Structure formats: C-alpha cells, structure tokens
Figure 1 (tube, rainbow, N blue to C red):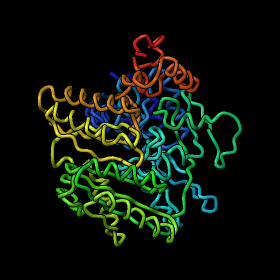
Figure 2 (figure 1 turned 135 degrees about the horizontal axis):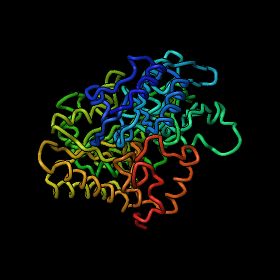
Figure 3 (figure 1 turned 90 degrees about the vertical axis):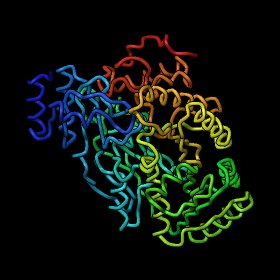
Figure 4 (figure 1 turned 90 degrees about the horizontal axis):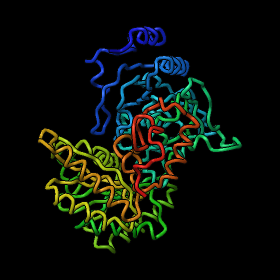
Length: 473
C-alpha cells in the first residue's frame, strides 16, 4: 500500500490528475518493449525541472526509488520498475524550447519525440541525425539514457555524438548542467559519462543537441542477393572500398516475408537477403558513389540492384525497414529481439551460428539489422502462451550474445544493458572494469535510488554486490 502522505505531497507538486497509484492505472507502466514486467508503486508526470527536483527530494525523505521513463519503447527493461518505487514519466515535458539556426543547435525537453524535432526544423534546412527505428515514438530523453543509434549512425554516429549539453536533476534533487553548447568546458567529460548511463546517474530535463544541414542529394539503393552470406560479403566490400554510406541495412528472407505481408513496399520475395544502402551528400559526390555501389554489388552476383526514383519510393523502402519489427507480428504472436554487435567480417560466421541456434530450439529467427556497423538484431519468433517458451527463448538469446562475444563483439549496440543483459556483463568486463564503472556511477548517485537494478549484476542497489565475487574472469 502506497503511503498516503507521499501521494498527497506528490499531488501538491504536479496536481491530482498527474499522479497515478491505483493498481489498474499502474498496469500500463509495468513494462517497456522488453519481456520484463514489474509494477511501480506510483506514477508521476512532472512538467518542469523544478517539479522533478521536488519529487526527487520527496522520494529521498520517503526512502523511495525513482525510475525515469520516456515513451516506454526501450528494449532492455531499462524503464521497468523492478523493485517498485516512483516511476517518473517525462512525456509532458515535450517542448522544443528554442532553435539556433546560425549555430545549428536545438534546446529541447526530454519528452520531445525524436522524429518531431527533424520535422520541426526541416523548413530551416536542418535535421537531427540519430534515428532509432522507433523514432516515430521514442523520446530524446530516452535516447540519451540508452545512447540510441539507428540506421544512419554508420555515417553520423550515435546519440552521444550529437548531444552538447544536458540540464540534469541529481539524486539529491540538485539541478546542474553538464557540457555546453560549444564543447568548450574544461575538465572531465561528465556529459560523456552521463549519456548512456540508463537513468542511474541523473534525470535529463533540458538537452542541447546538434543539428545538421539536410544533404543536397540522397540516393537509396535496394540490392537483393540469393543468400545472406553474399549480402554480408557485399557489406564488407563496400566499407573496405573506402565508401561510408549513411546507412547499410540488411533484412533476411523471413523478415522480407513479414514486411511484404504488412507494408508491401516492393522487396523481392525471391531474395535470401536484401540490403538498403543509402548515400547522401553533394550531387556530384552521391552520383559518383552510387556508381561505385552498383559496380561492387554487381561484381558480387547481386540478383538485382535499383535506386529509388522518387522520395515516395525512398520513403516506401524505409517504411518497410522501420516497420519490420511490427510486421513480425504477422508471423508469430511474440518476438524476442537480441541486440549484439560483431565485426563486419564476422557477419557470415555469426549468422550461421544463429541459424544453428534456430534449428536447435525449433523456432524461427528473423534477422533485420544495421549491417554497416555489425549491429545484429536477431528476432526469435514464439508464442509466450506456450508453457516453458519464455525460458527457452531467453536461453537462446543468451547463446546468441555469447556467439557475438566469441567472435570479438559485444553485448549491445544501441538498446542498452538494462535489466535484460546485466548478468552477461561479466562476459566482457573484469571485476576491476565493473568496479571503476560503479565508482563513476556512485560519484553521481551514491545512494542507488535512481533506476535501481540495471546494468550491474546483483541486487537493486549495485553496491549490494560487494567485491563482485559472483563475476567470472
């Protein structure tokens, strides 16, 4: 039962309509895009930095955890309140506060939807580069927590490369700024440590991001191959040629089938895999690079390669790619998405291992991923209503992550560690590595009240782990 005095104090800050504590109201806030679920004790919708500061101070007095939440699209359990507490939903803080066209900067609140920022500044000839597949709904605050990527991070980098400064509320309720809009602050890069800290080091309340000029020319190629091995080799060949496309995305035959069931964007049903290869830049640069892409793909026995002839065709191709995960619902009731990274040259080997895992568990695995930087997204298709299926799928996901690590890869490319992968951290980090990470985290939030139980193996507060005796070397 939630303390009635706590509820009264929270309502004084944000108003009666923006505090939820009835069990039925809390159900929708028990999960994000992952498989984990847990109910918060209370949900609060702040409107300002000052609201959040006051809420955090109240949480400290009542010994409550704080779990920041954006749109709930995360895929690693980062916004799931595993140990209860106050879930702080930031979607009311959704204002684009100012645009500095001359310096190509935007000041935004954390609840601004990613795609809405690019739409807002398009008439000014600008765009915001980080573009997660969920960009139609995910928020910039959530992107900062997870250091999100997206298809175009191959050329433009991930969220941390585009965030210049953040106003944050600390664990004790102070409001401070990290970084500055011209990257000229001397001293340690505290902002770099904060971005990607998954809500454990503070709560972003205002964000200054870098904007880029809309490219003069964009060409989107659709290349189809008979096998996924051939498509993987084409990816390595493109990069080794010296070209850096803005995006190289791959979808296998199973994903193509799902997309064409739902989106019908014209992917060839005879292909074992397709690549979306996008180039942008000046007219001359893109035209020359497009010829090189065509030559490389044709030299590798590409079944077919074409270039989108209009913005409508280009949008259709990307609508298929960005709608691929949702389209998998046409093949199975549920999917479990694994986010791992491997060197590009290890794509064929890793995909063969994933195929073997699929055969062993007798479940289909669809592959749709950011091939240009080796960020894999195998999706295990299943029905969670079948007894024992969840455990089977989670075990297979662990095998896939192990396969990524075995070839020199890592546990996550853009979805974060969250709750889902924290027990795998020992696979790539030593006790000393994790101890140093914990020291950094504790310098911001020593009491472990912010988003407890995430990233670090162990209990709700990471310092419960003592000397990490449970880790493997």
